[in-house]
Length: 221
Image (cartoon, rainbow, N blue to C red; front, side, top):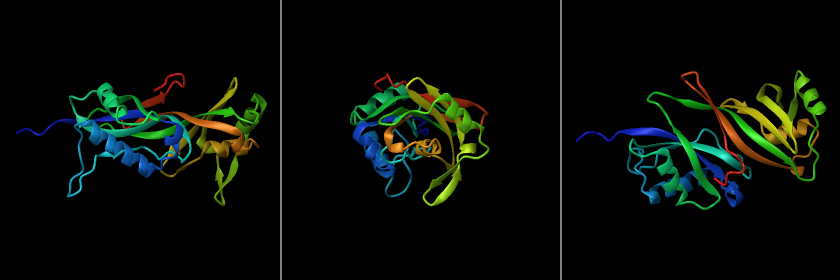
């Protein structure tokens, strides 16, 4: 009997409301249970206690809302992205919703290169264009985090004011990254006075390609 043919899907989902307080481990368990309940034909790990082979590019900080998270899973080649998203979303709370995905070519590997954020004012006032230009012109942007000084300059890919919101791109690698609150502190703002939402991700592949995935906030997901 021939071996079943699997393919890797990178699926995108939202993490809103109460689900933003799920730890990364709890999120993995929640989605694995949803995969089992949905009866998705996925590849499992080997051994006495097999688990669904799920891969997340990075853990979302606890409490942060996201309109675009991602995971990779291996499914039978006959399963489409649309089918996988629909079956998973049906087994999850409204605060976790799958909304799209991409199929990877054989041998293709993608890595997370950048996280995209939207910052809106709560009690705080957004920086104006002059403040942002002054920040970008600095040779270094030292910020304090957990008793250590981190230079935000090489990690800050972009920061722009768009009406009543700030859009920022922050580099991610296994060696390190930064958070939106680091950017706000560098701008002499209190992070607690703003609402931050992760809105997208940028991936690069071993084929030299770049993929920018942003979830439209007006889309209910």
